[in-house]
Length: 267
Image (cartoon, rainbow, N blue to C red; front, side):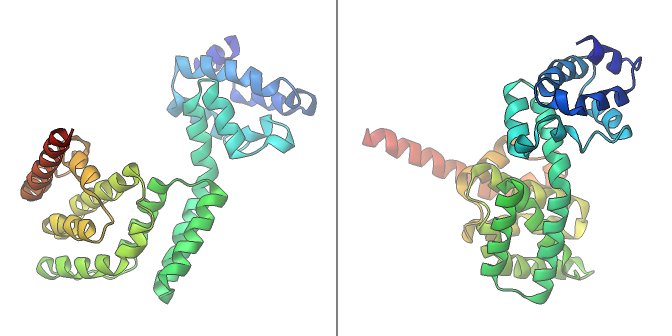
């Protein structure tokens, strides 16, 4: 615990942690010691301050080596440190371990799109990568969205780009729908669309049309759209976008209230 405090205030250099990779220590005490050390260190600072110190001494990609070889998996690491109350460390290491895999997934997916590979092949490939690299659906849907939108040359005219976007997204809606099976996964494309439209003003007027398309194509369902509309939207361009969505949002809200009322009457 004291070592964690001294690391936090800069008295010690993180290079001293390399001694924990001694084979005899890894067999029994390294992981347990690191739990106490990191709790103390993160309590003094936070993971965003701890991470650069680990990176400087090349420990950011070696933390799993604190476990014996038969336990050096992202699943074991995440479970161990999450249960120990160090979820921030678990998430940090998960991001470190999967960054390369996510980049490779996006690169390969874009190449498959350029070649015009069948959707069933793309879906199979993505599912295999998800399982192999422990990549959750919300992350995958973000990768799919980015790949779809980055592998096309958009028209420079605002009045034509919306039509072009709808046509392309309609084409790829089966691929997007394959990875929005959870509520959180459905919030991801909504936030991605909002961010995309905010960053590229040409798409701003197309926001409502894209959401409606995805709703009809069963990429998005009522509940996540309504949650996004009520309180889960991002701040970027929200006044313009929420105004666009007002009619559709109110329609969903009324439909939900009617459904609840009918359920109560049925009881």
